[in-house]
Image (tube, one colour):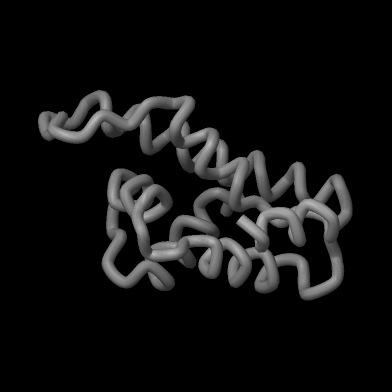
Length: 110
């Protein structure tokens, strides 16, 4: 099973009801502090201390594939009352990926 599919299952559990990929996007961009969810996912896969570049890239690619699939589904969906752009989703994910310490401290100050 690819990592993106594993992440989807775990996000579904953690986000309490995000059953579809579209729900996942809504959850990612909502006010429900999804940083907590991403941190939990990260720790489940890589542990507390391991933040190597290859792991960050793998994690990022899995999230990216998940979002790409969600956007494809969204474009086929009849409910277009909310407009999610690829750029918006990219930005949400970029801000919430595990960072190195200096970036992490900067984000916490925001």
